[in-house]
Figure 1 (cartoon, rainbow, N blue to C red):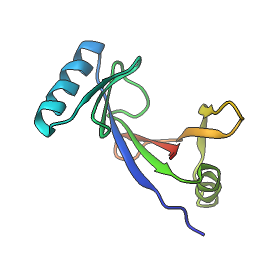
Figure 2 (cartoon, one colour):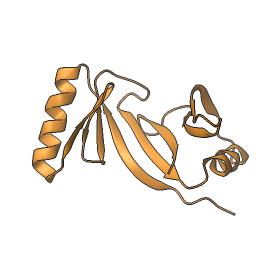
Figure 3 (cartoon, rainbow, N blue to C red):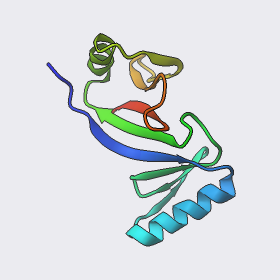
Length: 115
């Protein structure tokens, strides 16, 4: 059975916290979105994550969500994809919450997340 994936947000790398805040403000004003402040990023609504410093991906990351992350990882492995295990995050009960695929897609890292 194929997993359903859904675009959750686009992460945009910026060089500094100041640049991330400015970009988030611009995106909020342009698209009538609410800001949300985080430790590593500034969000413009739930669509844009403006990173306070560059992270994975030359341009940033694309976050894809799925209802069954463990099954999605197995499916993607079957398709030949590998994962950056250094980025794996787990819930308190030991279930995988999110992980990045290895490599870039058009200058973006791909972040797979449990919905």
